[in-house]
Length: 258
Image (cartoon, rainbow, N blue to C red):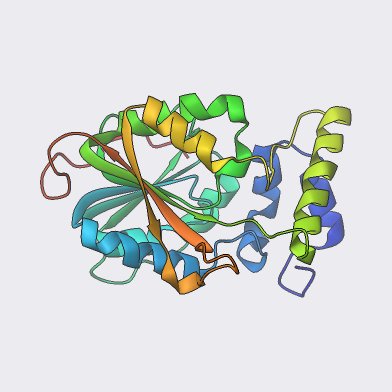
């Protein structure tokens, strides 16, 4: 992270003492050179798992950041791909990406995932690594928002990974990070909501079901299994009931902000 292309310790400190939006605006130029950017192997595994459920017409990358997740979406959606994020700096970086010839059109929209500026315009919504930015009390509203922007038959998909156990150094690293963030937010305003261990998969699935989704878990075999035989990586696929999505419907529509 502290290599020539990544942010310095000072830059990360300034980011952490800012709001979430301002912090990501500051980090945006170097974000793709940090561990926070979703790895390509995760993006590829999700695209492979979703391919049998398609084809899809219009896709949305929720909390898209610099746009890494739009690459697998472009291979799954034949008409349009939209990335939404509330950081103008991250979207500026995303807009500079040059899509390969033949890919569907891509739009970048500035908006809050808790108040999405779309109608029911998508057949597929994906999200990568965004849930740490939402407090547990915000999950019902978030699930309802995603449900509202999906066409009947559409799907909301995101990867989840088994947390490391106490014997693994990463367990203590993540625990320490979350503890430091809680102390920071108790002492400093505005808060910076970013927790690695706050999400409880069972609670999230329950909220998705309360929002009228049917939820299934698909194994991501690329990431192997733990010692107890359970998968290290899984894909949550939440299905909005209705006719099959993907071949018809209207083009995605939404308010585009700069």
